[in-house]
Image 1 (tube, rainbow, N blue to C red):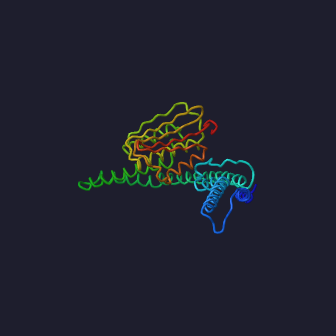
Image 2: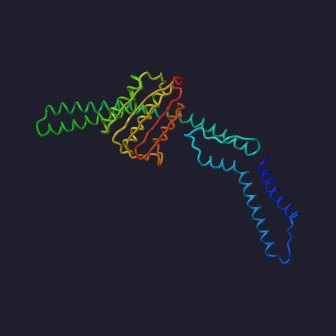
Image 3: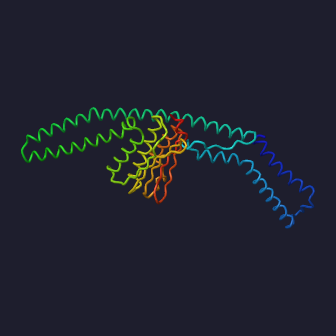
Length: 316
């Protein structure tokens, strides 16, 4: 039954019931209207309006559910669908909307994949330029300052050595940026070694205490899955240092029946979900890229970022 005929039938039912009551009920209307008759008519009208409103509410409930889903749906949290029941215009509308969500999620996943791959390629290019051009130039400057300081007299020698130290620190910072942009250790030594290096460098750079719990015997993962796990851990550690005001962070990596779970937990003040920024949305897009589930729980005692890769052995 179409929506038009459904609403028509509901109103016809109410009006027909009211007509039947007027025909067969022992109710008459005097002129002028008697108070008791007016009370009966007003009560009947109220009952009719309430019944009509209740029936319309029931008839339009699927449309209300559809409207609510339209206002809350998020393509970064796939799987939000309305149940498809029965036939008719409303059921067809729900089926069409669910099909549209399927198409949009597929297109979003494909576009996110292209964007993230392009982003990684751009990071590699920038890291290569920093290493080959900026790094080599600063190394040459460092050697020149060293030769000049060895030949200079005081107090110029002290100033040159101070400039040499500043240049060395800047070169170390460039090398750290290169490692963040292009984690060569991930390709050379694997995920566990890359996460160990990442957490160690993070603890040194931020001064936070970092605890590691990495399971042995992880299933073989493809390069894209390992890169997503690494980037999510990297972003979660960055958020813990910048926003959570944490003193301790725990990074764990475990597996059960082929499922790999990465968890980054801090003891900060929480509240990172008040407004999801580009970092968290970037993590969600990376999780969608490999079909993983990203769960972020935030409370006063801290925040946990949890990435679950189902059937990780099938990813390879």
